[in-house]
Amino acid sequence: MSATEAMNTNAAAAPESTPQVGRVPGVRIVGTGSALPSRTVTNDDLAQIVDTSDEWISTRTGIRSRRYCDREQGESELTLARDAARRALEASGHTADEVGICLVASFTPAAATPSTACLLQRELGLAEDTLCLDVNAACAGFVYALYVAASLLEHTPQPLALVVGAEELSRVMDFSDRSTCVLFGDGAGAAVLERAADAPALTATWGSRGNDEALFAPGVGSVDEAGEPRPSYLTMDGRAVFRFATEVLPKCTSEVLQAAGVDASDVDRFVFHQANKRIVDVAVRKLGLDPARCAGNIDHTGNTSAASVPILLDELVRTGALVTPARVVMAGFGAGLTWASCLVEVASS
Ligand code: UT7
Image (cartoon, rainbow, N blue to C red; front, side, top):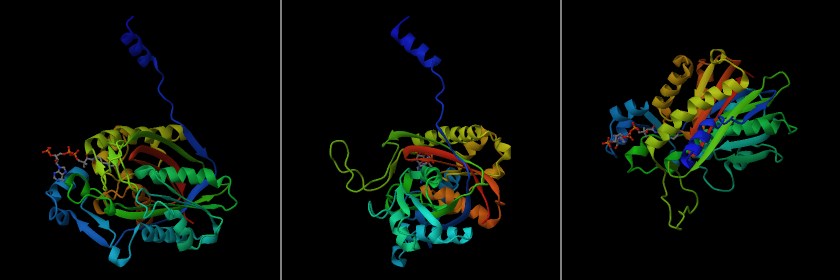
């Protein structure tokens, strides 16, 4: 047998990799909130500055408009995070002093430090012994943060965690690149996670695959391997990310269902990251899901990265499309590359 044949034989015989599964008993979401900035930008508005059209953007992505922060009005990633978090707390019926953990998922924080989570401590009047930190897993960030918060809740005296996804992507977009600038928007969403003995388990799966070519956004003074400055704006190989997304979204969704021992028909709602309606359509088809239970909101938000899952969740709750208590699967994917899914109960306060 040649070396190549031996390698192929080994490859064929290699067992399917089993995903890591996290299971945290006794946690549920008891309040959601969201905040979109004031400035609405339509596809026609963008067609004034790059060679594009409403027809191209809406048929290729499902996006019709998105929101951008108006800096002159004082809007920023932090103010959106604060407003979303306040609404989530209000919806939960709980107060800031009951929060022991505050996590913010974002890859567009205003500063490397202090973290947005730390500034939220001040803005929301959280106790000084609140565990505050930012989580950067790009568009999968909120689902990652939810699982991290649930795990930490097992060991903290306070019974509540505030989990926020907040982005100001308009700050890192190249408004001369039509292949990226039409896709993204700003916004924030938040959830209050509660530890309760009578709550079901939160089940999660996740993954990461280091790749800085498919999707890249600058950090402070980013340089490449040769020490040359990297672009100061987001760059993306859209087709590569599309292939990745349509691979991992159905995969991590079915993995979390399997890990929890739950049938898709017993899930009230699937809340998928809103990157492109076509990506969700592929996942829905591959998984054989009812499209009505997977409907999104990308038409008026664009892709808000880590904020997209909690914004959609909050819209579903507030419009009554999600009747609580509900069993919800959330899944995100994006730069890193990263992906994550979780099954969690969403209850009323
Ligand atoms: O949050 C996670 C990260 N992001 C994603 O998940 C995004 C994943 N990727 C996508 O959603 C899609 O790949 C895009 C929406 C980015 C692009 O859609 P596509 O159907 O894959 O288009 P494409 O990149 O294959 O481009 C098709 C054509 C090209 O022209 P030619 O080469 O065929 O002449 C592009 O230059 O469309 C052109 N094009 C545009 N035309 C009008 C690209 N952007 C635009 C535009 N307006 N805005």
